[in-house]
Every structure is written in structure tokens, then in C-alpha cells.
Image 1 (cartoon, one colour):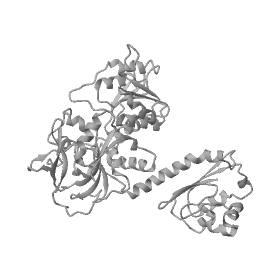
Image 2 (cartoon, rainbow, N blue to C red; image 1 turned 90 degrees about the vertical axis):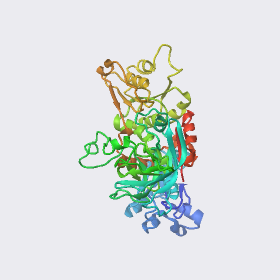
Image 3 (cartoon, rainbow, N blue to C red; image 1 turned 45 degrees about the vertical axis):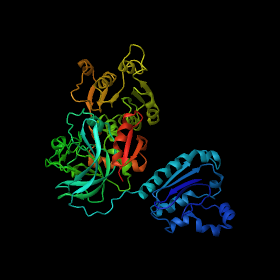
Image 4 (spheres, rainbow, N blue to C red; image 1 turned 60 degrees about the vertical axis):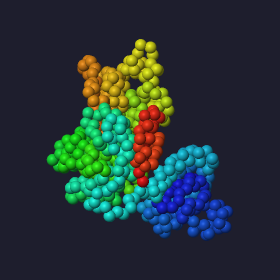
Amino acid sequence: MGVSACQAKGGGGILYFFGVLTKLSYIFRRKKAFTGYLGSVKAGEAHDATLLLASGAGKGSFDDILIDQGSVDDFLSSGQLQPQAFTAAASAVNQTVTYNLREGYDHGYNFVSSFASSHIEFHSKRMKKQVNAIRVDSLPPTDMTGKVIECKAMVARGVKNMSCETIFVSPPKAGEVRVKVVANALCHTDIYTLDGLDPEGLFPAILGHEAGCIVESVGEGVTTVKPGDHVVPGYTPQCNKPDCIFCMSSKTNLCPAIRSTQGQGVMPDGTTRFKDKDGKEIFHFMGCSTMAEYTVLAEISCAKIPKEAPLDKCCLFGCGVSTGLGAVWNTCKVEKGASVAVFGLGAVGLSVVQGAKMAGASRIIAVDVNPKKFEAAIKLGATDCVDSMNGLPEGKTVQQYIAGGLTKWGVDYSFDCTGIVSVMRAALECSHRGWGTSCVIGVAASGHELSTRPFQLVTGRVWKGTAFGGWKTRTDVPKLVDSYMSGELPIDQYITHNFSGVDKTNDAVHALHSGTCLRAVCKYC
């Protein structure tokens, strides 16, 4: 028999046959074991899990106890193992037990190998929660409420001109929240703006929008977060007002409550909260501006998450990873057995691959001009990889190769994660005749326009786009974080580079340009 349990506080272990677990020993009534190890059955009663559970020992310590039992185990047939008695005792004290009777297995090593991996996974998920609970980020008490804070920030003064400066951050006004930025992940959208490709790009500005933060103070009327709460800023706000047809609709996440001022680089009242050392104003960016040690957000842009969630990991849910997953699950609703093509294998593209795999897609074609990215794609679920620069048959475009070569009629769903309009067209044209859907995720440079033959749409293809994967920031980001914390949604693989300090942000920019970086995270404290 194999038994696993992991305490909410303390240790955990995997037990094969007879073993000891911190604070509580799970040994079923086995005459041979008790006599052999402890001298008598009577002496073993102090370690009998059935009696211990019945007495209330360990109550509330375990969310689940996992048991695997071989059906032809001699100890079971002889009555020395009594799992039914244990599960009955557990039921009496409302202790959850997962009991798996493995048909045809006895007491040998083949039996152990049949369940070992599931028990390791059982512990991995629970002990990850314990580690994260130990490493909770916290904000030292300050007396700066209502006062201007002096701190460091990366200020973009112009195209490809960004450096670390001292700035001054004003207190939050009504409906606003001032936060300490703990960690910021660099996104290609930041680079897109820094490189002068953003039609709404303003300078000077503090970029950054993918972060994990701690609330420092709140303005008048703020009720949904308080000082000390942990939040992920959202560039797509969610006002949740009953008269907001966007927030009340399940069809979209595009709340327009502060869109106009956000696009102008100011807070909802039309002013900024940043000044440089000369007293000159600095623009906000995407309503976030997280390349600063402190920033000010609209309350409706704050997704509150559990304090035990690591901010230097969960910052990724502020943009790229969430966008890729949501494009699959929300925008296109990819179904089990579907075929998928993904163009561009950065963090967003790989999260599309991951989301498609989790949705049950039967075939996932990963496309990129850099073959070095294929290994990561395969690990996340890609079944085919296409080098669209040097790996195509002579005379074939990538869309012709996918629709007509790798498949007969094209894929059910395709996703552009590049922001290149010619790739967006290729993605559409490799989608399935009659019902193919192609989703535009990547943001194209200013002035670029889409084109294709109308016949592509007349013959049943659908072209659509997504912003933040359709997620409603304040409602859905906490759910994504919960999935990460439970082990159901791994994201650590996207963080390929780590830096310490806001002043290292340009190093993160260089890393992102290297072609080997998915996400570079700068931790500020």
C-alpha cells in the first residue's frame, strides 16, 4: 500500500507499506508490522492511523490523503491491511481521502512503480504552496501616506532613450491606488513603444505594465483594495458598474471607463502623478507605468491576488501569458481534438501552445523563423514545428505548406503572435476552408494595414482579434493566479532571465532583443 499526505504546516512524505510521517504515522492495522517494528500490536496502537483519525489527531492538517492499494495484495486478503476501516474513520471526521484500488497488483515493486509519479505530483503541488507561503513579499511600514514619495524609475525620454532617474510620485487621488512595485516583467509592447512604433506613444514616459505590486496607500472612495494587499495591475480596466455594457457583457473585456485618458498618458482626472527632479511632469503608460519603484493606478485596474502568490512570478499574468491563454480559451474557445497553428514563439506564442494543449488540441503546429525556439514549443505541446524562413518546400508559402502539405484543408484555428501583417495574412490563409478561425494577437506597427483576398472570408474563414485574451482583469486574473498556485497552470518556464533593481531594466531590454529571452523579470526589492 502507498499512502501520501502533506500537512498544511510541517512536512510531508510518501509511504510505501510502513513508514513514518512528520507528526502523524499512517500505518494500517498490520499485525506483522506492529509486532516486528514495535514489539506488539498494543504498542502499535499509538501509531494506528485509523485510531488516530478517530481521536481527532491531525484534524484540519491535510486537504487530502492519497492511498493506492493493490487488489491482490496478500496483506489485504489476510486482513492485515484494512483501508476500509481507515476511510470510514476519515469520513467520520470529514477528512478527504482519495482511495485508488489498482487491479491486478500485489505487494511488489511493480505496484510501487504504478503509483509513485502520482504521489510525487500530489506532494509537489502542496509543498509549492508551503514554499510560497514562507516567502510572502511584504511592504515595510511607512509614514508616507498622503505625502510625495521619492524613488527610482526608468524614464523614457524619447525613441530608444531610457535611463534610470529619480522621480517624485504624488499621493493617490479619489479612486486611485499607490503601489510599491515588487517585480516587473519586460514585455515586447514596452519595446514597441520605446522603439517609436506605438501611435499613442508619448515621451517622456515611464513604461512597464506587467508587474506584481503591494498597495502602499489608497485614495478617497477606494473600497476593493487596502494598504498591504497584493495586486497585479491591468492595462485593461474593469469598472464593473451596472450601467457599463462592456463589463456586464460576457462577450468582451474592453471596459472604456478610463480608455481615453489612459491613451493620453494621464490619470482619469487628466493629470499625472509623476514629476522629475526639475518638477516637470512625466506621462503614464497603459495606465500602469511599472518601471518605477512606486506608481499610481486606477482602482479599477487593480487585480487583487493572494499574498502567498509570488509577485515575481505572478507578474506574468499582467499581459503576455494571460493573453495567449485567453486567446485560446476565451476568444476562440478551442475544443478538444482541434488542430492549431501558432505563428511566433515568444512568450505569447508559447502560451498559446500551452493553452491549446490544455484545451485538448490534437495537433499543434508551431511556426517561427528561429528553430532554437522549437524545443520549448515541443515541451509545451507542439506536435509539428515549421521553420518559415528556411524550412519550406521550394516554391511554397508557409500557408500553402500548412494548408495542403501538413494538412489537407488547413487548421481549425490559427494565431498570429508576431504583430507582422504579412504573417497575420498567412495565419488566416492556412486556416480551414469552411470554418477556420484566425486570431490576431500581435500588435502591428503604426500605419500598417491588413490585406487578403475577400474570397478567403467568403469561403468560411473568420478573422478576429483579442485584447488581453478576453480576460476581465479584476475578476479573472485572481483565478489564473489560483490555478498557478494549485499547480494546474505552470508559468515559471517563461522566465528565462532575472535581474535585480529598476536600474537593470536596460539589461532586460538587451536580453529581450537577444532572441533567447521569453520574459526578463526585474525584481525591485
